[in-house]
Amino acid sequence: MNEAHLHMVVNHFPIIGTILGLGILITGIILKNNTVKSTSYVLFIVAAIFAAFSMGTGEGAEELVEDMPSVGKQIIHEHEEMAKKLAIVLYVLGVISLTGLFLNYKKHAKANLVSFLAVIIGIVAVFFAQQTGTTGGEVRHTEIRVNAAPTVGAEQNATAGEQGESEDKE
Image (cartoon, rainbow, N blue to C red; front, side, top):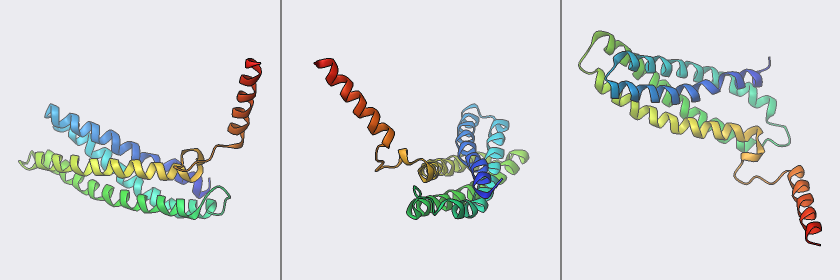
């Protein structure tokens, strides 16, 4: 398994874990259930750990793909910058989550305040997670890039479809 493959394996959990964690945390707040909130905190902590793994494997993955014809250095740079922002937010969310776990365990009065703080940071994290996932996808999936040109196969299919339509009209 090379660095790019390893990066692809670990880079999805920070995104999915953060989205799930946010949904679970909001549910815990609505239900006023500390066990549910603690579950979300654990997900956020694991997402932060996987963010560190993703950052650690990103450089090696970059080295393997940066010179490929369909991959531009600018696209990789944008992804890297977004990933750094996401990682920082997830590290902060991980620390807040550790605090939330501790305060829930101690049944401290400030536990609810920490859960609301975690929701706010979680929303920011989901925003950066979406941006990071999109820019990461653009590295190899040219079809999702903003200025994506149609592929040769799509052009041939469109031309064949137009010819079929003109033959039907005659």
